[in-house]
Length: 134
Image 1 (cartoon, one colour):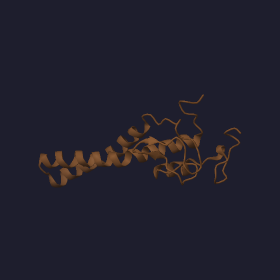
Image 2 (cartoon, helix red, strand yellow; image 1 turned 30 degrees about the vertical axis):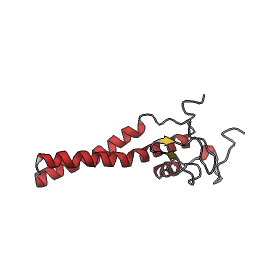
Image 3 (cartoon, one colour; image 1 turned 135 degrees about the vertical axis):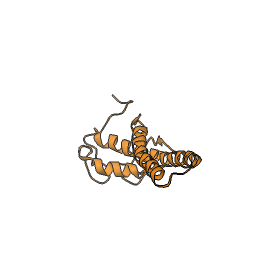
Image 4 (cartoon, one colour; image 1 turned 180 degrees about the vertical axis):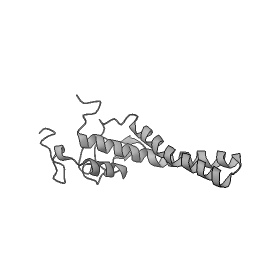
């Protein structure tokens, strides 16, 4: 059975995979195919296969896209906040040096696995062969 002939559990053909559904499921850390299994184990390591539907994810490589996406999002949140707080309240420098690095690390830690899930979901939905398949 080829990848084109295979149907996922919800009855959709591989060629008709929804990018939006796959990205949203990846955002939630769920299997983009069935939405029931986990996509990531530990913090950022993708599972080899979904425990529920058996879909393979170990071959997909997100590379630099999740960190890039995380930096883009966090930067667009933190920089306007820094400028706004500075203009409105003019806090001491030590306050800036305490709050903003911690908030940046917190947001990065929260967003990085979600961004990786989105990228893996999109890679899966496009049928990308990954770096280990020809």
